[in-house]
Amino acid sequence: MVLGIAPARFDVRTLDLLNARGLSEVDELDTDGLKQLAAVFEEEFETRTGMDFPTDPLVQLKAAIEAVLRSWSGDRAKSYRKLNGIPDDLGTATTVQAMVFGNLGPDSGSGVGFTRNPANGENELYVDYLANAQGEDVVAGRRRALHPDELARRAPDAWQALAGARDILEHEFKDMQDFEFTVEAGRLVFLQSRTGKRTGLAALRIARDMVREKLIRPAEALARLDGIRLDEIEETKLAPAAGVTPAATGTPAGIGVAVGVVAFDPLRVAALKRAGKAVILVRETAEPDDISALAEAAALVTLEGARTSHAAVAARQLEKPCIVACGGFAINPGGQHGTLGGEAIAEGDAISLDGSTGEIFRGEIEVARNRPLELLAEIQRWTRKRIPPKTRPASIP
Image (cartoon, rainbow, N blue to C red; front, side):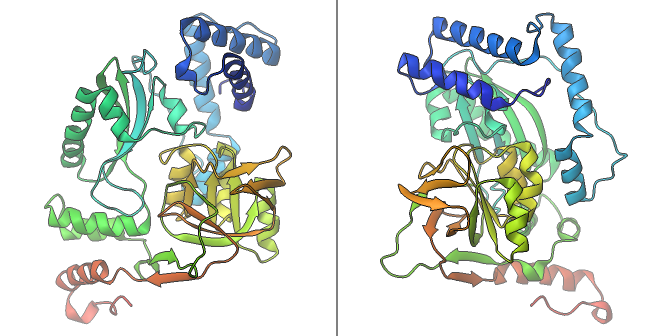
């Protein structure tokens, strides 16, 4: 990350080592295997940079801080600011804090979570977890996350503490939280918590529920919904004809549906869109530089990754349906062809996907649409109580 070496280079070396040892995951390596992997990584680092890997902690720290500051001027950051109306002169900063280790064994790990579902707003703990791993492994989108049940099995005390902390976070911050955590030898440590990004539908449902729970007042809920086009919020699902079954299924990481043509290369998304086509971007792993292509695409599918990866979070914020960890998709070297459900698929072929169920179909499937009328009616009642009769807006359609 600091010196700009493509992560794929290390992924290739890792896969070679795992294959040589007949294993499928890094956390299956024993001590000797991990030492060998570290040596392989150092060799790759030296080949790519022409220098030894720095062993002085202060040298590492200085380089990491400088990399964060440089990232403010990177293409990904510029695209993100443009999409979200963030001024270029705001600047960025770093936080330096003590380390905890999620890679000390099977009862350690790292995860990312939301105190409520950021896709549909349901009042449920939404967590992705990787055992014996560090936090970057989760958010980078290069590995498939484990179900929270696996965290509860491996570190039951940490899971109980996490479940209990959910209410503490929401009562403290009065909003849905996006948090990162590490489990070090069974002990839960929170790394950070911040207001979570969410879809328009989730914002609507969370605002309604938090008023009912007396966490916030209606006036605060209305302020949070300011800028969201309530008249455009709808719930959609695919309505396949009888006998039509999904070609593949992944992990749903958003809501909504998309019908469009496949693009395996982010550089091709804009060209296909200019040709008048809705485009579904399909990637092995979504990289940070894909943010501009994602903004142009109708949806995102990744073969690896987790619901809380950077790519999935960005997709939800952009109101794009997203499916991750879709094993039924494969991309051939070169990136213009692949397979879906074991059958060939090429750039420009049509598919349909449901971000709520994780299902992917070949061809164009009919879309059913519904408005969340009960939610909208409650928002309308707050508006009527707040605004004098002569100044009330027309009813939400």
